[in-house]
Length: 203
Image (cartoon, rainbow, N blue to C red; front, side, top):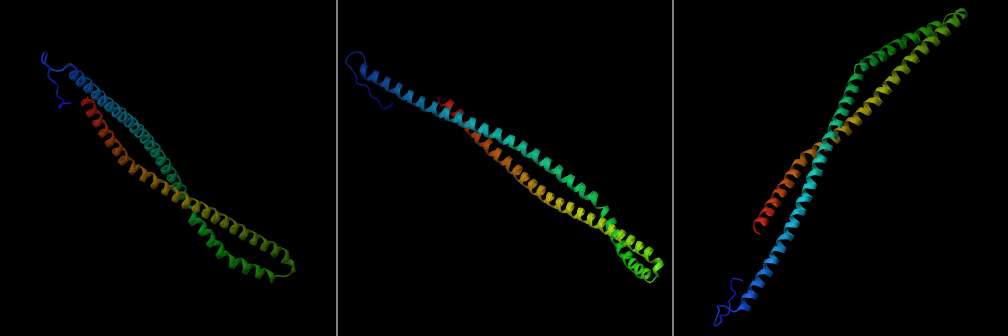
């Protein structure tokens, strides 16, 4: 537009048609520039809205992850407390097992001794042996059941602790990565805001 030249006329200065064409061309180009800037402005607004949506979603995700981490932490603490509660009973079970083993030779010797007694004491010996065997069987059953229960709880605790630890690590990794993603989104949003500001100032 700056290189446009107007034809001179004898009277009145420049040629009217040249001036009109120049004005129309200038108005057309200005309209095109304005349309382009408005389109760019609309695109930038759309990108800003999408980034705001992403930031909102990221914040919600961070809150959810933090709540999940807290829940898993509490679950792990409960499992640890349950295992610690079982620990005092373990020595007692081992003590009972040792006592049973110590009593076994005496019970067997007693049963053999009673067998030497005559027919008069046969019934009493049999009852005593049955009582001894029932007592030993009962003690062995109690110890076996306790060992089984302890093993089951210990295995369950180990599996749960491993799972909870793994989930906590995942949550911590996600939480560690989330600030960087939010910072990047914030930086991009700031850059878009600057671009939008410059676009408005250039109008």
